[in-house]
Length: 162
Length: 381
Image 1 (tube, each protein chain N blue to C red):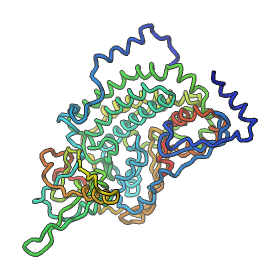
Image 2 (cartoon, chains in turn blue, cyan):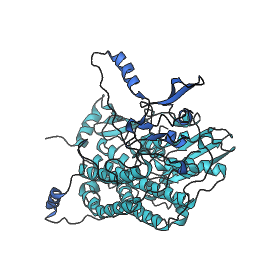
Image 3 (cartoon, chains in turn cyan, green):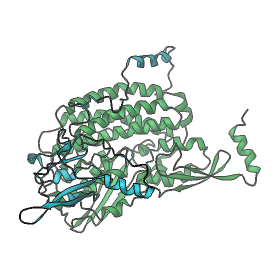
Image 4 (cartoon, rainbow over the protein chains, first blue to last red):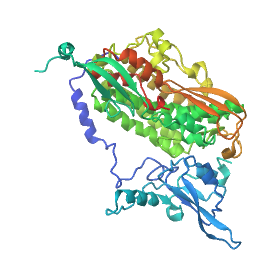
């Protein structure tokens, strides 16, 4: 790698970039076409989706979560008078490691390929109230709203943990 | 006309208030993270240096004692952001050593391939950052774009781009997806073609040669004495590579070429990374060719309830910056009793800095850091 003599035409090499596609993509208008599926990878670890009918509320996801992002919320009672619990994910803490998906015994908890989550903040709130407002908005109970586009999931046949 | 810098230094020496303190980092554009050097300066010359660590301290080692064995895998990659896989592999290998288990061959090869891919991303980032430290921004842009191609592959394989959380005790989380190997081969072809361009814009660039030649010289003995590892050690003429001397994952099956260079200055270290980059591509191709079929992990039952028998083990992995070591002690419970991490940047970032930085010009500090690939998170673990 010694210093070589440069060609006289070397400044012209930049011109070839005129005919190349740009590396950057326009967000969110342009769709990535890297993977077999359009958009992010087929195995993407995005926002959670949960089949609430299949979910038995066993709290395995809560126990495995490394960052304490999942808490079980009581949403009602069954015929025997027992509380029905479903997981609520705090996206302020979630690291998208997908251990909760791996550990789910009924395979109801999955991750979708959606990664955009937006909220509208109220401008009239004071700084202190805004923190509380945003904190609540980041706690979401996953349901099947995002179920149309499943990303990372472990079928029963290839369970990873347990 | 501006006075030359040495004149400023000479004028300043006569002044009583000549010595001033300059904070190089944490918010200096030439600094690689939340770390800094407090420099005592006369003019543009450094007189004394004090590493200012601790601003990135998250208490990793203590935190790991309070989490389940498997939960820690989501935590360890954060010790080195640009090269996260060695941490996962070292931690898992230490657990496997204590448990006395051997993972399936295919898992070993998948681990090797992801480790080498991680090395490529780190080298691209390192070479780009070195260029940027010298004011050459084009290499950085090109290399960041190329690094993204490897991150795409990681996203496809693991579901995450930066923190892969892919290795678990007993193997890896999933097998290679269909079509992934073809895509990897295409990316490797692309990177090989790109090497010519890297040489033109960075390694054959007269600016790089002029700025890096003779900067931060480390002799053969000093490199060992200070505890440098990885490319920095090999650039000083010491033939040591964990992949060859103490093979882990599938390196025992592969023909790893140890590259040594005499020289020991920043330019040699930069060229060392460039040559190792080429070797890494060859190594991935070798691993892909030899990869067997079969299972990708052992069934250890429910990993959330994993209990590691009483014992201790030290596992080391050759990362892009040097040797990452994990010393894990288990008391037979569901959580580690103690985890100690040996990071490769600590000797250079804290000790070597105090030898090299005095008498250096302020302009060279960022280039010196770039050439030694100092990564602050592993100083503050």
